[in-house]
Amino acid sequence: MTDGAGIASESGGGVAAADGPEPAVRVVDLTKEFPGGVRALGGVTFDVPKGELVSIIGPSGCGKTTTLKIIAGLIEATSGRVEVDGAPVTTPGPDRAFVFQDFALMPWATVLRNAAFGLELRGVPRREREDAARAYVDKVGLSGFEDAYPHQLSGGMRQRVGLARALAVDADILLMDEPFASVDEQIRRKFQEDLLELLSGEGKTVIFVTHSIEEAVYVSDQIVILTRGPSRVSNVIRPGVDRSGGSDGIRRSQAYLDWVEQIWHELQGYLDQ
Amino acid sequence: MATSVQGRAGRPAPGRVVAGRVASGAGNPWLLRVGSIVVVLGLWEWAGAASVNPAFPTCSDTLVAFGEMLTDGTFAAAYAETAGPLIVGVLLTAVGGVLAGLVMGLSPRAEWLGLPVFIVLQASPSAAIVPLITFVYGIGFTAKVFAVVLLSAPVIVLNSYRGIANTPRSLVEMSNAFLASRWQRVWKVVIPAGSGLMFAGLRLGLAQGFTGVVLAELIITPTGIGDLITYNRSVADYPAMFASILSIILIASVSVTLLQRMEGRLFRPEMRPA
Image (cartoon, chains in turn cyan, yellow):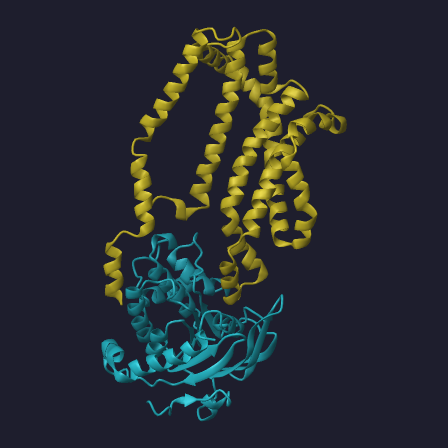
């Protein structure tokens, strides 16, 4: 672990995927300039292997969310490209589902309708989409709350609805924008464990934006560290933490603690700039 | 996973706590409401009896006149005449105003074109414009409808516009991410998100519509309830005049409240007490 075997350097942007199969998502030299000349991304390149959970981490304002929204097709890149299964994408598609930081639930709709909304927009008949949504509402642990409205739920429960909505459309790729940022610490840990458990059987590729180092090391197969001003990939790490010991085992393992420490040191360098 | 959520479910959700507190604060609303009405009517009776002004009748005299006008069909005849322009005007404005607000909220060009007109209209003293209507539309039904529209349109249009233009960005982004067509986005997200402000506009617009129709009947041609007020003043039957004014206030308040109830029942299920 400490010998740095898991680290791919910045210079070889595609290194992480070179030895693996075709990546699910390939981000190539992405730049983004916002009106007014603010340069948010300055050439971001990384690969996301199929079926893995890749988190993007970095100091605030480093363009994590911008990168994720470009992958989602919600924002247009100034230059560079995003490939999903080898094909370039610029707009949202049925292969990607998004989980929003602020949940983005419709306050006038019940939990069930919110969870089924992606299917509703695709014209799936009511009974069919509600059955599918009910299954995911149940899976995220909200059975019994199908008819509740978002304002009747806690923050953590609302994000579970957001997750159910994203899972219900059965996209191969799940894009999560700081999904636990608005959730308090205790719920957050439980939610991370639930997320891993939930995804374990689904075979989905997940891109996960977070500002929490612990969270990134805990949930990720691969971590992309972004630096800011303008944003670039500074490092790609594969922590390879042994998950067999359960959540407590992971959080106490030397490998987990070493990685948290190492990423912290790396980010600290950029904070001082 | 399920167990943790069950555990959380045991606690009341924050929204419910607030709702519960509001409900207990208004625990005996009937007592409060009836009490406040009794106090106001009592003060009125006292002021009338104290002969503040010969043209100011007591509450009891007014209520007697009210009862007489109600039973002898005076009110019915007057409101049959007033209701026409009011209903036509309010319906026209409700449909047209919401549509105009919708278009202005969705299209920057329409916003550029239309918004200033309605802002100026809202700011201008409409009562001063009402006499101008007679130059164009004469003194008939159309003129009164126009007066209603003139007063109610700005508030309906501007509120609908604000409701549409201020759709939460994250909901629009969500609908894009989940592949909504433009039409789906407007119908399933933008309009429901703006419906609260739209209905606020409709309520205010209805109240303004009452003002418009009474103004028209006072200023343009004395008919309906406006005539009842003017006539009773001219023959110095002050209790009847006050009863007429009271009747229009009552009807306006009841209509606005009914509209609010209807909104809650039909369109805002999340606002219903659980």
